[in-house]
Image 1 (cartoon, one colour):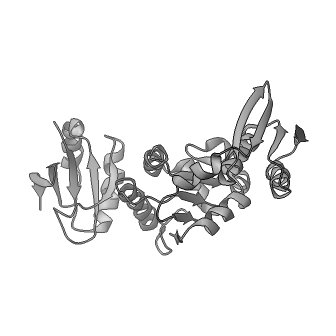
Image 2 (tube, chains in turn red, purple):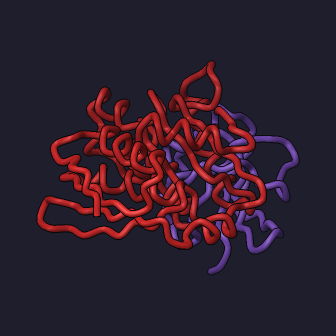
Image 3 (cartoon, chains in turn green, purple):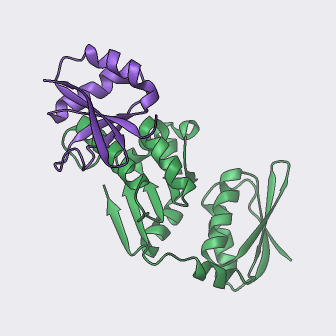
Length: 192
Length: 83
């Protein structure tokens, strides 16, 4: 089986290498990486492309075996009727008074966490990454939403920029490729 | 005790001030004022009924007007009102 060596490569390189194999029509291949974030991103790529991903961890090395099984029809069956995403690019709802904006954000996620119509994903970028790293009340609501199947994607570049990578309390470290894909796949994207 | 407790305020500023005031004393969450209490949009604070003694103590020292309710289902019971 073809093996792609992506060890020592940081995101999004392993995802790009795997996507190349998928685009080339490979139905069975293995990607080797040496960090957990890359491993998680590859698993998500597999799911979004209708591939099965079997992960083998050997010390710090992760081997992700991609296979085009009958995952595609399954993935199609669980598609929600309407897909929407929430984009959070700052710590507040709207602009104006900062403190009011933070209060509105708390109440937005409080209300969303109790709603039946849930987004497929919530995307945090730029100042928005300060929410899943430091907004105590919102973090609680995001955990509830995550348990209900909502994907919480947090821009890794932004976490790194603000020095907040270690403070992430909820959600997955993600990248521009995954975040843009969510926006493209959604029927609507709501920016706060 | 079932349900939850809610404190409402006549102004947004008072609600935000109260959140800071209560935060140290008990776990509170900010929520939109429940529809059964008010049809208008407003900020309310929610906490668990088990924190009622701490909340009452902290609210006694809060200078602004407020109303404290307990909600079970959709029917609010007014516990305390300061004008």
